[in-house]
Image (cartoon, rainbow, N blue to C red; front, side):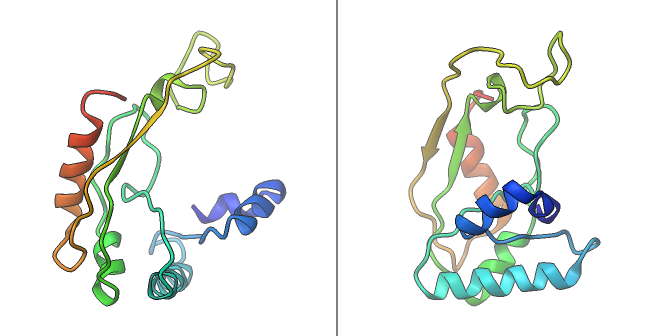
Length: 144
């Protein structure tokens, strides 16, 4: 999300990691188009791109409907897409889950088991957001 790029320390980390700031079309359509162009170029260069097709964090740990941005990215560069799901994040201190102390970010557990599960590559030339969402939901299962 483009606004966190304004935070000085995070900005340095994101630039070093070569992340691409992205904004909703309603907020900054020019930045969104610039992001799509950078993603297209990276894919053409054979680089890997990691995206969160939901477009944002959920307030309850459930998966939101995937947005069509993934489809727009694949129109000009139909590369294979590897579906991935994060399991256990909701039990970690990084979730938005409320606690007795509110959202203080104190560790709920000193060690939360977080898993990243990857599925088989999907054909980017025929993939749509709904099909990718279905696969990610299967990968995650009931784990939040």
